[in-house]
Image 1 (cartoon, rainbow, N blue to C red):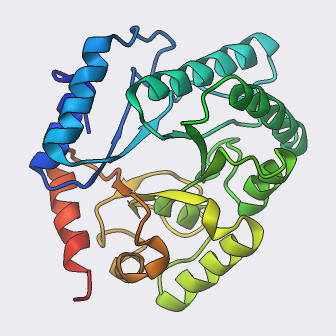
Image 2 (cartoon, rainbow, N blue to C red; image 1 turned 90 degrees about the horizontal axis):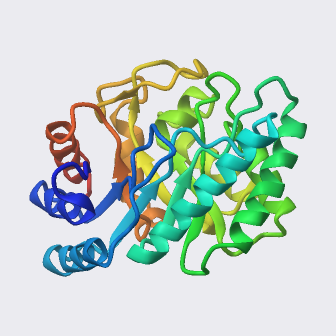
Image 3 (cartoon, rainbow, N blue to C red; image 1 turned 30 degrees about the vertical axis):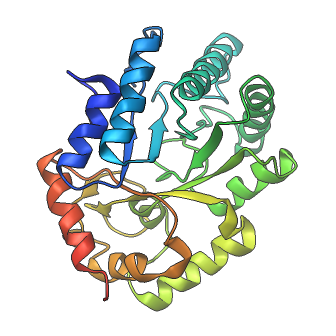
Amino acid sequence: MSTSGGGLGGALRSGKGIGCEAVQVFTSSPQQWYSKPVTQEMVDDFKLAQKETGISHVVCHDSYLINLSAPDPAKREQSVDGLTNEMLRCALYGIPYVVSHMGAKVQQTAEEALVKVAEATERILDNTPDSVTLLMETTAGQGSSLNSNFEELGWLLEALKGHPRLAVCLDTCHVFVAGYDIRTPEKFDAVFDQFDKIIGIDRLKVVHCNDSKKGLSSKIDRHEHIGQGEIGPAAFEKLMNDARFESIPIVLETPDAPEGHEMNLKKLRSLIQQ
């Protein structure tokens, strides 16, 4: 939900207005490095909005500029500082999860880039409060993005020795265009069995729920309304009725917000089997 006009508290109130029980926000502009200081007044309004709306599940997405594996040391350091500050802002608000794309190879091998991500992530976790968990997002594999396959996410978890504050946010559109077919209940189960084997289902803390404008293995990140894209409704019906996801926040990032979000939220709820 947008924070324009009402800050994070306004985002929760807007979310409640369309029926949300979980909301994802940005604590600052995702397109620039600068962020305004968090004041006590901003925190108080956010806490008040949580009480007013009953929305306790809040997720933050970090800046799109972050690249923890940037080959330029100065840019990598800027990314470390940026993500550290994001985690610190979330700690002030009491937001438990920060979702990050983590990094992109940019003229490096995946192995070289992953080592840089692991080193940067360790520093970030060492310098941020225990109240905030960093969620590595599954990516579409567009361009040189890392973490479009479960093996890379698993490698990072292992490199960080299974750090308790490092986990995963899975995006349905991203995994599909990266090559994981979830279009039928059987294929859906096979993909999540693979996820569990390589990463561990207990490490899945948030789901980004989006259909895809583009086809399987296309590596093109274009979100579509639920049931209207290349994934289709069966995967989302499975998601909404699978006990493994019962306590995991499911967040929409579909087009035409906020009207599209309201429509897609109703669509998802209509898929729940009574």
